[in-house]
Length: 88
Length: 500
Image (cartoon, rainbow over the protein chains, first blue to last red):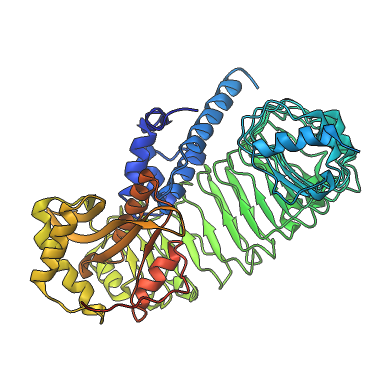
């Protein structure tokens, strides 16, 4: 199991170059709905990190963070990207 | 006769705290939750739990299940999410499974499922599936199927047998085409096919009775929307649409349409008069047509980041329109006037930017005490007395086990909330007592209150508090609605006090 501090430093969005801690900070400091709040993190229209960001956004909304869940989703996405790059 | 095998299994189950003292024989057990125990294997004697109906093995490190589980003929609901399975255990084919969640494994082969004819709910999301041809027999009972985040390219041979399917999630696959066989999904109500490579949708798709469709982030360039008589919600965000047409007979009961970031040059007007939500943000729209008045049920209009200069006068007459996102448009003065007449509850151009949420500092205490008078004006149990309120806030600030959070704008306190640590005998642990949540009138309807309470919940979680609680004035309807919407449950308790 990863430490909370390690998970907070994990990159969650490559386009916006944000880590989990940045995303939590941004979501805690906006009252915009997800679609708009997501753009504050990604600074783009792409959907690559939507699943992970939606999870963090929902957690921010309810004020309770499951860091293991966040880490799992990010890792799943990275593994998927790797497999796609390998030609799957 | 003493049953050693049962004794060993009972001891094994006991160490995970999943059975109660009243369990005497294996047949007493109908439900077991062994989730999150880092299990690498299940004992072979597990098969003696022949009355087991529900089994949760999620979040472990399992790669296989013991053959004895073939005896679990009553098991109908099994959860093996987030384990290390690379194929579905063959014991499943001997069970009468109705619900299977195998999400988050590395499964590439589900051929064992062809014998599970009673299966109704199947979640195979986040696995390694590339092909599921021939898995479901023609008399299958599948109602809900989640295949999101796999590597599927073509389901055309699977659709014809899924006639009872109600919910289908194909999000995050590699599908390029909705083949004409999709017309066989005659029971389908929800389809999520976001994040695929979809370019072609067969005509037969439009004859379906689907109610909710998500086509977000595909490669759709041209779309002629028609029929879909039961459709209520459609999301087309982030498709490179060069052409989008809606016929007059398209979705007569449509309530929500979203087409963000699709390069739309015109404001599309669906025929449905029941529309409650239109999202056309991040497009190239220059004009909102005056016919928008036809949508008297409209509650939310999201048209930010377009090229809109003028707005039709009719917009101000949409009495139900309470949320308007319109930032990032070169609006004329007249358009701004129309927005001020409409006066929606939530409007991004009225939102103030730069409101920060932070821990209170000593220099904030005076403004916080002043802000409390706004709260006590509403709450009839309290009287406004600046000196008392200042003293109270100062005590709180200086005492350990207290947290004071403020919302600040231009270095002034515009909102606040406090939390004090209590010991709850009911929870057997610390809990947080929330008090003094108030936002200045000019800063309401901007989500400041939500941000304050979310921040406090996050702090409570960090401290490991088991609960947060608060008291609210029963005559303050706004506050009661606010707390309910944010997931706080109203209790049966009333507060009494006695002045000493």
